[in-house]
Structures are given as structure tokens and as C-alpha cells.
Image (tube, rainbow, N blue to C red; front, top):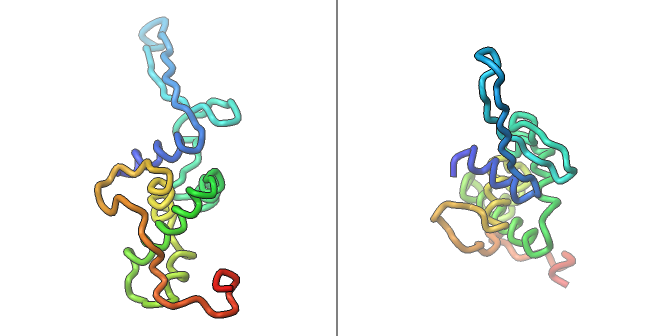
Length: 144
């Protein structure tokens, strides 16, 4: 998916709706224009350039991630781990957490779209297992 397709898919997944508005011009100085407006979940219309930029803004991406349900959140974590490991395979074992925490907006956007089933690529169609190669410490809540 290219960046525009990713941006549009995330907007739609977060409850935004695309509306096409046609302004009929009254003379040659006011030509007919067609403008795409986005209706926010709050019911406010915004031009494309004023919508959240999920591929460049970590705060916007965080708000998108907060819209996920529990199952999607679990898939998001798996995908974020997989993508972080894929894009920075230099470190082994416990270092995958470092990469996941420092994932870029683009990496998080890909994980988000894969978690909600909107990724249009053909690679890795199923959610991967966790890439963590070390067992959890015995005092970790998930290991108890």
C-alpha cells in the first residue's frame, strides 16, 4: 500500500467518512470545483490536509490505536513486534521490545492496518507469533 492508501484506510477504520462536495461556479472567476471533505467521528467536516496525519504524527497514531478492540489490540501487538523485528533485525532476544517501543509512525500504521484487516499487501497474511525469543522471567505476571 502506498502512503495515501494507508492514510485513507486508517481514517476510515477510525470512523471518518469521505464526502465529495461540488461547488458550482457562477462565472469564469469562480469555476466548478470538486473537493473531498472528511466527516470526523465528531460530525465536523475537514479538508484532507486538516485530518490527522497518522503516518507522521505519533499522537494521532496513538489515538487510532486506542480505537482497537481487545482482539485487534492483541493482533496489533503481534504485528508491531513482527514489523519491528523485520525492519531492524540486528538485535536478538530481548531487544525486540526496544524496536517495538521505538517503532515509527509508518511501522505502527502498518501494524494497525494489519490488525484491523485493511492491509492490502500480499505478504505475511496471518498474524505472526510473538518474536520474543527469550522465556518470560519467572516473576513476570504472564508467567505466573
